[in-house]
Length: 68
Picture 1 (cartoon, rainbow, N blue to C red):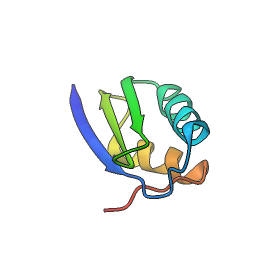
Picture 2 (picture 1 turned 90 degrees about the vertical axis):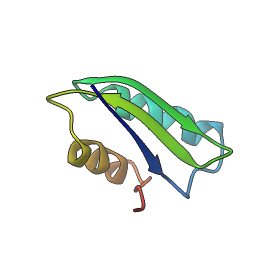
Picture 3 (picture 1 turned 60 degrees about the vertical axis):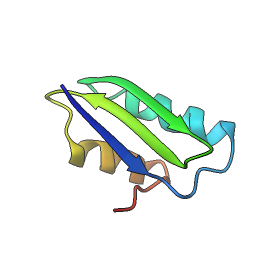
Protein backbone atom coordinates (compact mmCIF):
# COMPACT_ATOMS: atom_id res chain seq x y z
CA UNK A 1 0.00 0.00 0.00
CA UNK A 2 1.27 3.43 -0.93
CA UNK A 3 0.31 6.70 0.76
CA UNK A 4 0.63 10.04 -0.97
CA UNK A 5 -0.33 13.65 -0.29
CA UNK A 6 -1.32 15.92 -3.16
CA UNK A 7 -1.41 19.71 -3.02
CA UNK A 8 -4.66 21.02 -4.52
CA UNK A 9 -4.71 24.82 -4.24
CA UNK A 10 -8.18 25.36 -5.71
CA UNK A 11 -10.13 23.63 -2.94
CA UNK A 12 -12.56 26.36 -1.84
CA UNK A 13 -15.38 24.71 0.10
CA UNK A 14 -16.88 21.52 1.50
CA UNK A 15 -18.47 20.80 -1.89
CA UNK A 16 -14.96 20.72 -3.40
CA UNK A 17 -13.81 18.34 -0.67
CA UNK A 18 -16.75 15.99 -1.28
CA UNK A 19 -16.34 16.01 -5.05
CA UNK A 20 -12.62 15.23 -4.83
CA UNK A 21 -13.09 12.42 -2.30
CA UNK A 22 -15.91 10.78 -4.29
CA UNK A 23 -13.92 10.88 -7.54
CA UNK A 24 -10.78 9.42 -6.01
CA UNK A 25 -12.57 6.75 -3.96
CA UNK A 26 -14.19 5.57 -7.21
CA UNK A 27 -10.77 4.54 -8.56
CA UNK A 28 -10.13 0.82 -8.23
CA UNK A 29 -7.31 0.24 -5.76
CA UNK A 30 -7.90 3.41 -3.70
CA UNK A 31 -8.60 2.47 -0.09
CA UNK A 32 -8.65 5.93 1.51
CA UNK A 33 -9.04 9.49 0.26
CA UNK A 34 -9.35 12.55 2.48
CA UNK A 35 -9.30 16.10 1.15
CA UNK A 36 -8.57 18.91 3.60
CA UNK A 37 -9.98 22.41 3.18
CA UNK A 38 -7.47 23.97 5.60
CA UNK A 39 -4.25 22.57 4.14
CA UNK A 40 -5.61 22.43 0.55
CA UNK A 41 -4.40 18.88 0.23
CA UNK A 42 -5.54 15.35 -0.47
CA UNK A 43 -4.24 12.26 1.33
CA UNK A 44 -4.65 8.99 -0.54
CA UNK A 45 -3.84 5.37 0.32
CA UNK A 46 -3.78 3.15 -2.76
CA UNK A 47 -2.46 -0.02 -4.32
CA UNK A 48 -2.45 -1.51 -7.80
CA UNK A 49 -4.20 -1.00 -10.14
CA UNK A 50 -4.38 2.61 -8.87
CA UNK A 51 -1.25 4.69 -9.33
CA UNK A 52 -0.08 8.29 -9.13
CA UNK A 53 -0.85 8.99 -12.78
CA UNK A 54 -4.42 7.65 -12.51
CA UNK A 55 -5.09 9.78 -9.43
CA UNK A 56 -3.63 12.91 -11.05
CA UNK A 57 -5.70 12.32 -14.21
CA UNK A 58 -8.89 11.91 -12.16
CA UNK A 59 -8.19 15.16 -10.30
CA UNK A 60 -7.53 16.98 -13.57
CA UNK A 61 -10.74 15.58 -15.10
CA UNK A 62 -12.90 17.05 -12.32
CA UNK A 63 -11.13 20.43 -12.35
CA UNK A 64 -8.89 20.05 -9.30
CA UNK A 65 -5.39 19.45 -10.68
CA UNK A 66 -2.70 18.58 -8.18
CA UNK A 67 0.42 20.77 -8.21
CA UNK A 68 3.93 19.49 -7.70
